Image 1 (tube, rainbow, N blue to C red):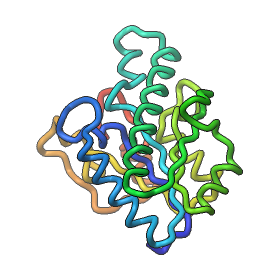
Image 2: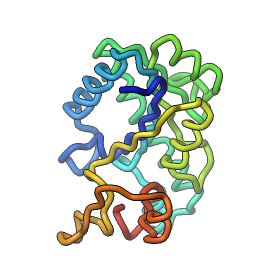
Image 3: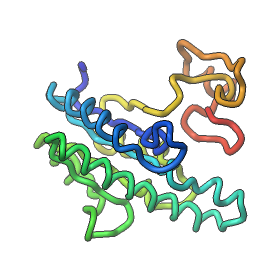
Length: 202
């Protein structure tokens, strides 16, 4: 790949396939095969997984839930995804560790930066769950934070959308897909490619 250490941001929605909710085992297997191919090249890989296939804090808040409470529920959804993904990766022969920003020692290690780096140096994939452990921060924010902490060379974001559009392509058939964007273009056009907006799917 040309990168020594990679952080992959995997949206929860990417795990549900065409089901519309939950986790599609076939998608998990497909991801496991791709991760195995990446790790086989010697690339150190960490994954931040979202929880939107199960629960999205922002939607819960919009429906009347306390925002902090809704975000904590969303964090728990990411742990469910992380454990499921770990199982899929280990069945594909990839040693994997889940580190959670919320303490739940029976199913995951606590997030410890040095330990995460050591796992990757030993060829293990590390899955970061429960976001930052704080409400009001998305898993996209977590991806940027963890990437900086572990010294990742690059961040890749994998979602169910095949690129960046000027508006949600699922709701706007005429949405325009961008081939490339500068950081300033993203900001000036308010594309929100990392932080999801409740009314726009970009």
